[in-house]
Image 1: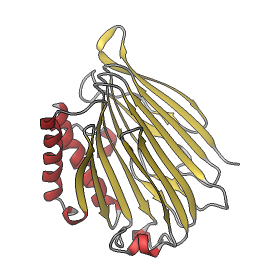
Image 2 (image 1 turned 30 degrees about the vertical axis):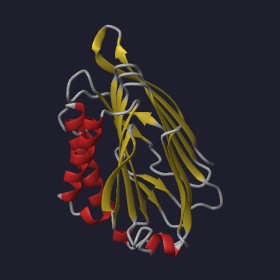
Image 3 (image 1 turned 180 degrees about the vertical axis):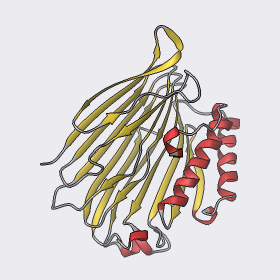
Image 4 (image 1 turned 90 degrees about the vertical axis):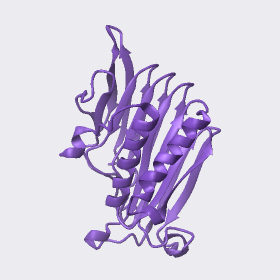
Length: 279
Protein backbone atom coordinates (compact mmCIF):
# COMPACT_ATOMS: atom_id res chain seq x y z
CA UNK A 1 0.00 0.00 0.00
CA UNK A 2 1.49 3.40 -0.99
CA UNK A 3 2.52 5.86 1.71
CA UNK A 4 1.25 9.44 1.60
CA UNK A 5 3.17 11.45 4.17
CA UNK A 6 2.87 15.16 4.96
CA UNK A 7 4.96 17.44 7.13
CA UNK A 8 4.52 21.12 7.94
CA UNK A 9 7.40 22.80 9.75
CA UNK A 10 7.13 26.39 10.96
CA UNK A 11 9.97 28.51 12.31
CA UNK A 12 9.08 31.62 14.32
CA UNK A 13 10.66 34.00 16.77
CA UNK A 14 9.86 33.03 20.37
CA UNK A 15 7.35 35.51 21.83
CA UNK A 16 9.04 35.23 25.24
CA UNK A 17 12.60 35.40 23.93
CA UNK A 18 12.66 37.44 20.70
CA UNK A 19 16.24 36.45 19.83
CA UNK A 20 15.35 32.75 19.82
CA UNK A 21 14.02 30.82 16.82
CA UNK A 22 11.65 27.97 17.66
CA UNK A 23 10.24 25.19 15.48
CA UNK A 24 6.76 23.70 15.50
CA UNK A 25 5.60 20.90 13.24
CA UNK A 26 2.63 18.80 12.26
CA UNK A 27 2.76 15.52 10.38
CA UNK A 28 0.71 12.75 8.84
CA UNK A 29 2.32 9.45 7.98
CA UNK A 30 6.01 8.56 8.19
CA UNK A 31 7.72 11.95 8.33
CA UNK A 32 9.26 13.29 11.53
CA UNK A 33 11.34 16.18 12.84
CA UNK A 34 13.87 15.36 15.53
CA UNK A 35 14.57 17.55 18.56
CA UNK A 36 15.59 21.14 17.82
CA UNK A 37 19.28 21.86 18.36
CA UNK A 38 21.10 25.17 18.88
CA UNK A 39 24.80 24.54 18.21
CA UNK A 40 25.39 28.21 17.36
CA UNK A 41 23.10 29.93 19.84
CA UNK A 42 19.41 30.71 20.12
CA UNK A 43 19.13 32.57 16.83
CA UNK A 44 19.46 29.56 14.51
CA UNK A 45 17.32 26.45 15.02
CA UNK A 46 18.72 23.22 13.53
CA UNK A 47 16.43 20.30 12.71
CA UNK A 48 16.77 16.86 11.13
CA UNK A 49 13.94 15.63 8.91
CA UNK A 50 13.48 11.87 9.10
CA UNK A 51 11.56 9.56 6.74
CA UNK A 52 11.58 6.21 8.61
CA UNK A 53 10.78 3.98 5.57
CA UNK A 54 13.99 5.26 3.99
CA UNK A 55 12.72 5.50 0.42
CA UNK A 56 9.80 5.79 -1.97
CA UNK A 57 8.26 3.24 -4.31
CA UNK A 58 5.68 3.85 -7.02
CA UNK A 59 2.60 5.58 -5.63
CA UNK A 60 4.33 6.99 -2.53
CA UNK A 61 4.08 10.74 -1.92
CA UNK A 62 6.14 12.94 0.40
CA UNK A 63 4.65 16.42 0.82
CA UNK A 64 6.88 18.81 2.79
CA UNK A 65 6.07 22.42 3.65
CA UNK A 66 8.62 24.66 5.37
CA UNK A 67 7.69 28.16 6.53
CA UNK A 68 9.99 30.66 8.21
CA UNK A 69 8.38 33.60 9.98
CA UNK A 70 9.78 37.15 9.96
CA UNK A 71 13.24 37.40 11.48
CA UNK A 72 13.59 33.67 12.22
CA UNK A 73 16.40 31.41 10.98
CA UNK A 74 15.90 27.68 10.43
CA UNK A 75 18.21 24.96 9.17
CA UNK A 76 16.94 21.60 7.91
CA UNK A 77 18.98 18.57 6.89
CA UNK A 78 18.39 14.81 6.68
CA UNK A 79 20.20 11.82 8.19
CA UNK A 80 20.44 9.94 4.91
CA UNK A 81 19.71 10.04 1.22
CA UNK A 82 16.22 10.08 -0.26
CA UNK A 83 15.72 6.96 -2.37
CA UNK A 84 13.44 6.41 -5.32
CA UNK A 85 13.13 2.65 -5.73
CA UNK A 86 11.93 0.44 -8.57
CA UNK A 87 8.39 1.24 -9.72
CA UNK A 88 5.72 -1.19 -10.85
CA UNK A 89 4.06 1.54 -12.93
CA UNK A 90 3.08 4.35 -10.56
CA UNK A 91 5.11 7.52 -9.97
CA UNK A 92 6.86 8.20 -6.65
CA UNK A 93 6.61 11.90 -5.80
CA UNK A 94 8.39 14.25 -3.45
CA UNK A 95 7.20 17.85 -3.31
CA UNK A 96 8.87 20.43 -1.08
CA UNK A 97 7.40 23.91 -0.64
CA UNK A 98 9.49 26.59 1.04
CA UNK A 99 8.25 30.04 2.09
CA UNK A 100 10.67 32.42 3.81
CA UNK A 101 9.24 35.53 5.47
CA UNK A 102 10.51 39.08 5.66
CA UNK A 103 13.99 39.32 7.13
CA UNK A 104 14.10 35.54 7.71
CA UNK A 105 16.61 32.92 6.62
CA UNK A 106 16.45 29.23 5.83
CA UNK A 107 19.11 26.65 5.02
CA UNK A 108 17.68 23.67 3.12
CA UNK A 109 20.45 21.08 3.18
CA UNK A 110 19.10 17.57 2.54
CA UNK A 111 21.36 14.73 1.56
CA UNK A 112 21.15 13.50 -2.01
CA UNK A 113 18.26 11.84 -3.81
CA UNK A 114 19.19 8.49 -5.37
CA UNK A 115 17.34 7.23 -8.43
CA UNK A 116 17.53 3.44 -8.41
CA UNK A 117 17.26 1.40 -11.58
CA UNK A 118 13.69 1.21 -12.92
CA UNK A 119 12.36 4.00 -10.71
CA UNK A 120 9.70 6.43 -11.90
CA UNK A 121 10.27 9.54 -9.81
CA UNK A 122 9.18 13.15 -9.58
CA UNK A 123 11.07 15.60 -7.38
CA UNK A 124 9.73 19.15 -7.09
CA UNK A 125 10.99 22.15 -5.11
CA UNK A 126 9.01 25.42 -4.94
CA UNK A 127 10.50 28.56 -3.37
CA UNK A 128 8.85 31.80 -2.22
CA UNK A 129 10.85 34.55 -0.55
CA UNK A 130 9.54 37.79 0.96
CA UNK A 131 11.53 41.05 0.82
CA UNK A 132 14.64 40.79 2.96
CA UNK A 133 14.49 36.99 3.08
CA UNK A 134 17.47 34.77 2.37
CA UNK A 135 17.85 31.10 1.44
CA UNK A 136 20.84 28.83 0.99
CA UNK A 137 19.96 25.42 -0.35
CA UNK A 138 20.80 22.63 -2.72
CA UNK A 139 19.47 19.74 -4.75
CA UNK A 140 21.73 16.76 -5.45
CA UNK A 141 20.62 13.78 -7.52
CA UNK A 142 22.47 10.53 -8.15
CA UNK A 143 21.56 7.99 -10.83
CA UNK A 144 22.18 4.41 -9.80
CA UNK A 145 24.83 3.15 -7.37
CA UNK A 146 28.11 2.97 -9.32
CA UNK A 147 30.16 1.81 -6.30
CA UNK A 148 27.80 -1.13 -5.83
CA UNK A 149 27.70 -2.06 -9.50
CA UNK A 150 24.02 -1.07 -9.78
CA UNK A 151 23.75 1.29 -12.77
CA UNK A 152 20.73 3.36 -13.78
CA UNK A 153 19.60 1.43 -16.88
CA UNK A 154 15.81 1.92 -16.82
CA UNK A 155 13.39 4.47 -15.44
CA UNK A 156 13.11 8.21 -15.27
CA UNK A 157 13.28 11.28 -13.08
CA UNK A 158 11.15 14.39 -13.57
CA UNK A 159 12.71 17.35 -11.81
CA UNK A 160 11.25 20.79 -11.16
CA UNK A 161 12.79 23.72 -9.26
CA UNK A 162 10.92 27.03 -9.29
CA UNK A 163 11.07 30.47 -7.74
CA UNK A 164 8.07 32.10 -9.47
CA UNK A 165 9.02 34.80 -11.94
CA UNK A 166 12.72 34.40 -11.11
CA UNK A 167 13.92 30.87 -11.73
CA UNK A 168 12.55 27.75 -13.36
CA UNK A 169 14.44 24.54 -14.03
CA UNK A 170 12.42 21.63 -15.31
CA UNK A 171 13.39 18.49 -17.12
CA UNK A 172 13.20 14.74 -17.45
CA UNK A 173 16.13 12.35 -17.24
CA UNK A 174 15.38 9.05 -18.97
CA UNK A 175 17.73 6.14 -18.37
CA UNK A 176 17.40 5.26 -22.05
CA UNK A 177 18.56 8.71 -23.19
CA UNK A 178 22.22 7.95 -23.90
CA UNK A 179 22.72 11.34 -25.56
CA UNK A 180 21.71 13.12 -22.33
CA UNK A 181 23.47 10.81 -19.89
CA UNK A 182 26.69 10.26 -21.80
CA UNK A 183 26.91 13.02 -24.42
CA UNK A 184 29.29 15.97 -24.01
CA UNK A 185 26.39 18.43 -23.87
CA UNK A 186 24.61 16.38 -21.20
CA UNK A 187 25.95 14.63 -18.12
CA UNK A 188 29.01 13.47 -20.07
CA UNK A 189 29.08 10.10 -18.32
CA UNK A 190 28.69 11.53 -14.83
CA UNK A 191 26.00 10.10 -12.59
CA UNK A 192 25.52 12.86 -10.05
CA UNK A 193 24.28 16.38 -10.69
CA UNK A 194 24.21 19.15 -8.11
CA UNK A 195 22.50 22.53 -7.93
CA UNK A 196 23.51 24.82 -5.05
CA UNK A 197 21.79 28.17 -4.69
CA UNK A 198 21.74 31.44 -2.79
CA UNK A 199 18.36 33.17 -3.16
CA UNK A 200 17.06 36.48 -1.85
CA UNK A 201 13.61 38.02 -1.65
CA UNK A 202 14.81 41.23 -3.28
CA UNK A 203 17.66 42.12 -5.58
CA UNK A 204 21.09 41.88 -4.01
CA UNK A 205 23.31 44.92 -4.16
CA UNK A 206 25.80 44.66 -6.97
CA UNK A 207 28.65 44.31 -4.48
CA UNK A 208 26.77 41.54 -2.64
CA UNK A 209 26.07 39.67 -5.85
CA UNK A 210 29.68 39.93 -7.01
CA UNK A 211 30.90 38.76 -3.62
CA UNK A 212 28.65 35.71 -3.76
CA UNK A 213 29.93 34.89 -7.24
CA UNK A 214 33.58 35.47 -6.28
CA UNK A 215 33.57 33.27 -3.18
CA UNK A 216 31.81 30.47 -5.07
CA UNK A 217 34.38 30.71 -7.87
CA UNK A 218 37.18 30.53 -5.32
CA UNK A 219 35.72 27.35 -3.81
CA UNK A 220 35.24 25.79 -7.26
CA UNK A 221 38.75 26.70 -8.44
CA UNK A 222 40.26 24.91 -5.42
CA UNK A 223 38.05 21.83 -5.77
CA UNK A 224 38.49 18.51 -7.57
CA UNK A 225 35.33 19.25 -9.61
CA UNK A 226 36.69 22.52 -10.99
CA UNK A 227 36.36 21.26 -14.58
CA UNK A 228 32.69 20.25 -14.23
CA UNK A 229 31.33 23.03 -12.00
CA UNK A 230 30.43 26.67 -12.54
CA UNK A 231 28.53 29.55 -10.98
CA UNK A 232 26.09 31.99 -12.57
CA UNK A 233 23.64 34.68 -11.48
CA UNK A 234 20.60 34.48 -13.77
CA UNK A 235 18.76 37.14 -11.74
CA UNK A 236 19.67 39.80 -9.19
CA UNK A 237 18.00 37.69 -6.52
CA UNK A 238 19.76 34.44 -7.32
CA UNK A 239 23.23 32.89 -7.53
CA UNK A 240 23.48 29.27 -8.68
CA UNK A 241 26.33 26.76 -8.67
CA UNK A 242 25.93 23.70 -10.90
CA UNK A 243 28.23 20.70 -10.86
CA UNK A 244 28.56 17.22 -12.32
CA UNK A 245 30.40 14.40 -10.58
CA UNK A 246 30.90 10.68 -11.20
CA UNK A 247 29.51 9.86 -7.73
CA UNK A 248 27.85 11.75 -4.87
CA UNK A 249 30.74 12.32 -2.47
CA UNK A 250 32.70 15.02 -4.34
CA UNK A 251 29.49 16.85 -5.26
CA UNK A 252 28.35 16.90 -1.64
CA UNK A 253 31.80 18.07 -0.53
CA UNK A 254 31.57 20.95 -2.99
CA UNK A 255 28.03 21.83 -1.87
CA UNK A 256 29.07 22.00 1.78
CA UNK A 257 32.09 24.13 0.94
CA UNK A 258 30.04 26.61 -1.10
CA UNK A 259 27.40 26.80 1.65
CA UNK A 260 30.10 27.54 4.25
CA UNK A 261 31.65 30.24 2.04
CA UNK A 262 28.30 31.95 1.34
CA UNK A 263 27.37 31.79 5.02
CA UNK A 264 30.44 33.77 5.95
CA UNK A 265 30.65 36.18 3.03
CA UNK A 266 26.94 36.91 2.55
CA UNK A 267 25.41 36.38 5.99
CA UNK A 268 28.34 37.09 8.31
CA UNK A 269 27.94 33.71 10.05
CA UNK A 270 30.43 31.02 11.00
CA UNK A 271 30.44 27.86 8.83
CA UNK A 272 28.72 25.84 11.55
CA UNK A 273 27.72 22.42 10.23
CA UNK A 274 24.74 20.39 11.47
CA UNK A 275 25.92 17.97 14.15
CA UNK A 276 24.57 14.97 12.28
CA UNK A 277 27.10 15.55 9.48
CA UNK A 278 29.89 14.67 11.91
CA UNK A 279 28.39 11.34 13.03
